[in-house]
Length: 112
Length: 111
Image (cartoon, rainbow over the protein chains, first blue to last red):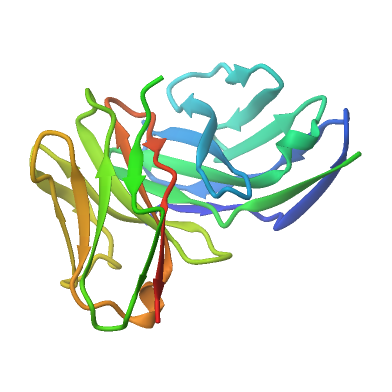
């Protein structure tokens, strides 16, 4: 069964600094999708960034970028120039066909 | 920008009662999903729905759960006889391809 592991329950970053959130996953599939979702206190799930497993190039979305290491089954999220509004729970997710699995989440605190 | 909507935002029910959670997916999406998130825990997949039938379901989605797309716009999750442990946020999501768009969630409280 596919599992997603986020080993950092909590992370903290100073405003304007850079932080990296870790995610690993376990799968025997070769073609799948990976996502990072942000969940602010409102509890809405907001897509931050996605990565197709067949693409070698790391996805980038403004201040958000990923380091996708397919062989290592690692998918970390880097947030540059952190802002107060980035404070939230971040969930890593794996999707193969209609099966979507989430990690336990990392709570990110941004210090002014 | 089109979005997934869910009603109600908060539902309080007594144990043993039936509840129906409603979702309106994005109109041109073809795949629909329900997830739940118990407070403080991770988001868990419940069920996926395509072409008017369930395509996948998790071990959580037992006989007390059912889903329906009664018309061209709504997608519902029914819990037949609620239990205390059903208290959670329930998220609906939809997609046309691989990127899922989530609704704002319904907070279900079972007393």
